[in-house]
Length: 196
Image (cartoon, rainbow, N blue to C red; front, side, top):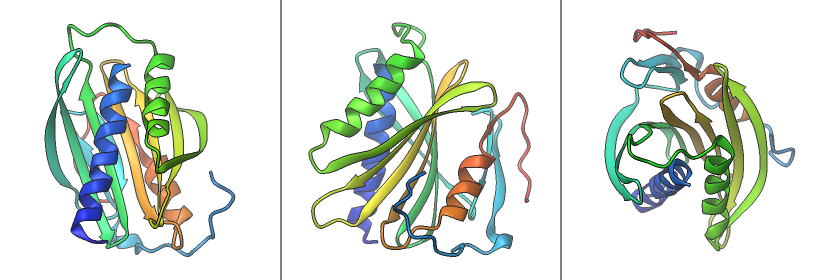
């Protein structure tokens, strides 16, 4: 995937994540795992209080977003195992002075953000629970000449919002890898970095 496309995809993640802070697709063709077992690593963030298996060592970036609730810092961890796939985790703490949005309002804001883009098509959504916290998964496709799809899971933790995301080429999905990534996400009290 070209560098500009990667930047656009990162933008998608930031937009969905920032707006949700404020206010399985049967059509997939099953391809074998694209990532060898030895490349999967358990990554933990003590500050973010989460752990997840990434298909490689993640790069960390942070962005600052101005919102109605004030300035919000989003912490982002990404791995690109190939030119067409991105695995990422974003998290942020709820702003101290922000209005207290309900979990439903946060999920509604994420859905509205996805639907607001004319070239994005929301394909499905479903509820789930992770570490006793409510979550919502959204599947989407980017229209036009793009062949990009994505799956985003948003989890409302006690003190912050988490988003796990996979962006991939529609013609070459790897559901086994997606399941391994999503199912490994945990919100924890105390975590340590280690290989799995």
